[in-house]
Length: 105
Image 1 (cartoon, rainbow, N blue to C red):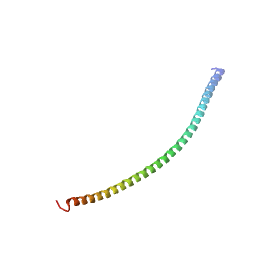
Image 2 (cartoon, helix red, strand yellow):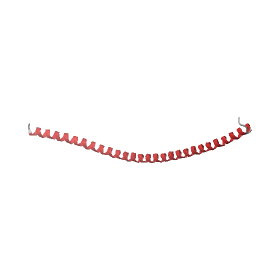
Image 3 (tube, one colour):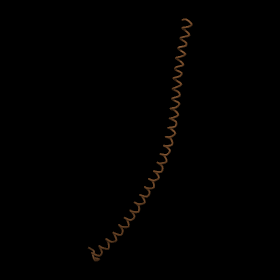
């Protein structure tokens, strides 16, 4: 191989390497931009997840408060029902005595 051929061959290889290096540099730059954008998006999502967590905690507190109030309401209704039953039993006893006129049947 002649020195000129070797020189041309080396020159083509250098051009090939330079072309690939330019492509790699462009690819790295695109990836760097994408990484920057993704980092920003991850930061935004992180903030939203934090907001969602706070919302869920507030909602849980509200549900817990409503459950407590509902239980208290059921307890009041149960107590009122018990008093009503007691009063009805007294009324039934009075009515039975009235109609039986004190007679045992």
